[in-house]
View 1 (tube, rainbow, N blue to C red):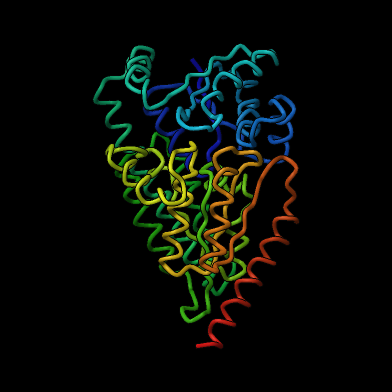
View 2 (cartoon, one colour):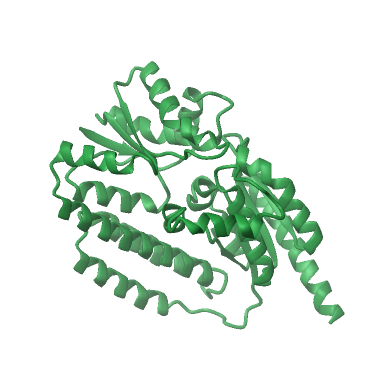
Length: 359
């Protein structure tokens, strides 16, 4: 059994390490790039959203290297078509000549799937618990590292210092597999020291922009064409509340879902799947926290995100806060994204200057 999975930004390293600790033969998926997107789009149904096309493109090089099993998490609620992903992926890949099985995980079959994994690779319960514990430590480290880079990038005196530390750290995390807890603690300490040496201008005027929307387009910088780096170079500190930890936690504890619905009930009275309700909730939080602007990232045609976009636009108009919705697909050009971001940042600066002049 040779396993692969979808490329998921910097989290890919943690997923790879987890599977290797469980004793699986892992073939790492291809990093998202223009060729991956092009190949995936050729096989995927045209009207399916962008992540499906990217995922299929990620799998293809691994399948050519001998991978025969794909692991993926599916969404089983609301109008998000992701609950069909595993069926569609298996079908189109088999029609393309690959003898592959897609093993889907969701909130209902999680225990049975873990039992199936345990039976396949004969991992002990303690091995699985220990592997999961280290996995979440790595995920938390990656998220803290990204948060710190978002803060430092628009403030650094010498452009590129933060990204160099970030890339070096991720390379070390990726090359030491399976990663021991002792080594991870040492890497965390070393990274903190390196980031503390990055020279910044604390008094530099900084804009703050909240990123909301669909998780896949938010967390993978290759999919969103390096949006956080582009904004950082323009003097913008980005913030994203939605990450893998929050996504995996989902409805646990159960009252979280009730609380989320209560907060957005005056705007949306039911779940639409995906991250529709979260986008509204996060936008309201960013407004309360005094952010200068909000960007929604979504795959073109994403049903939950398209459903809530008019709501987000109305909130933007009511609260008088700049809002930009960016749809991504295989036709999206980097120069187009750059132009839209520059125009959006200019708008925020002009608005902030006007507000300051009226005080």
